[in-house]
Amino acid sequence: MDTASPTKRRPLSLAARAALATGFALAAFLGLTGLAQNKANYASELSAMHDRLHNYAIAYITGTDITRAGKVTTPDSQPNPDFSRPGSGLYAIIVGNDGFRWESSSALGRDFDFVRMLSPGETAFEPVETRSGKLYVFSYGVSLDSTDKRSVPLTFAIAQTEDQFERQVATYRRTQFLWLAMLGMMLMLLQLFLLRWSLLPLRRVSSDLAHIERGTRDHLDGPYPVELTVLTRRLNAFIDSEREQRSRYRDTLADLAHSLKTPLAVVRSQLESGGDADTLRGDILDQVRKMDEIVAYQLSRAATSGRRTIASVEPIAGHAEDLVQSLEKVYAAKNVLCEFELEEGVSFPGEQGDLLELMGNLVENAFKWASHRVLLTARSVGKVRGRSGLELVVEDDGPGIPDEKIEKILQRGVRGDERVQGHGIGLSIVQDIVKAYQGELHVDRSEELGGARFSVKLPPP
Image (cartoon, rainbow, N blue to C red; front, side, top):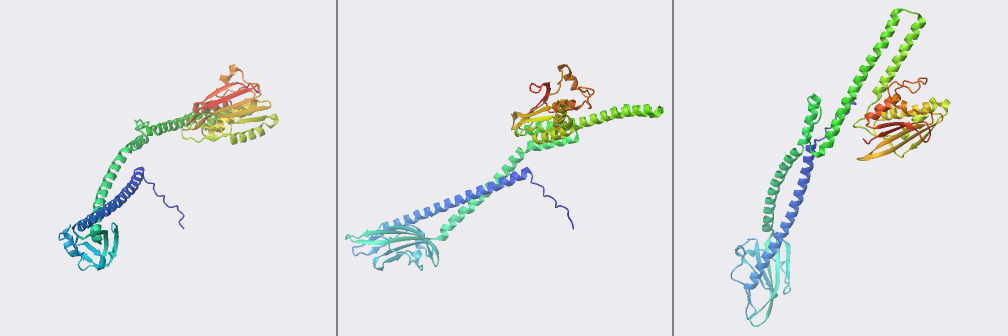
């Protein structure tokens, strides 16, 4: 059975994402705009038809007379020629009492039984479904006086087929769709052009990175827009950090090889000389001890990772407890009590390995020299862009360090007391880490415990 994981789909590029997002937003905007315009146009056309049919009704009312005998005389001229053309779609109907009914020539053969009498002054505008299709009907109820002052109630109805109205609406929609489509295409092309222009700085950063990979450039030189300045500055710092780290590893290996040459040469010469066995054994053990010190020193140096540009913060509390528990076992005979004063949530602004090297060497040194008490204090200092620095203080109640020896004990390979076991590089490693993090190391006497006090201050990353 094939258990290979499926190929992951490649994420869309920034340009594709922006184009899709803009396309969807533009389509939604133009669609809603078209819908709103269609509704507005429909209402406008309907209102225009209402006004037009109303004017036709007024024209018929004006041209209609009532004789002395109460007979209704309709106008000879029509307000629109379509009223005289059968089946034109524009119809006029007049109804009155006693079954009076008059229809325009265009209404011949049509069924307009739906026209009802309205009270004088009453109007109505409504769509009506008929066997020949939908009609929009405007009705106006009036009361006309005859020459003998007799009032005759009449209702004038003007009807128009839906076809004419829908043709006007459809024509508007087609024109609107064409223009909106053209506008949408123009806006999309403009957006793609602007997007390509906006992403030019990113493409330039990508091109500059490619030059750095090929070795034709050392850094991202710019200038870049302000939004990319922080990114390019961090990338340049990251490049410098990685180059510095490679250089340190290379130098460490070279130093290790060079340092081991002399002890190995001595061992070889001693073996070749064939001297006394006890003397030979003592000399070889002495050289082995030196090589062990050299290897420990170089490995410790290589373990100092230095400050990383891209690094997470490391909580201190858990590491401090684990470290002290281990040291209490090593120095159980001294019965040393280690006290903590750790600010809640305090963190080391860097890599875990650097934290363990820094805190481990300081606390172990305190355990080594303390009589009974060690105090570990850690608190946050400074705050830049939401990230804090660190102040780490380790104190003991031992003999302390004379001022004139402080500078000496910070040197590599120098021990405060040659009778005390060690390689003499712990404090120098601490100093290297502090320098790598652009911090400060201060050594003086503890006011509270009376012994040595090592204070480390690291700025925010």
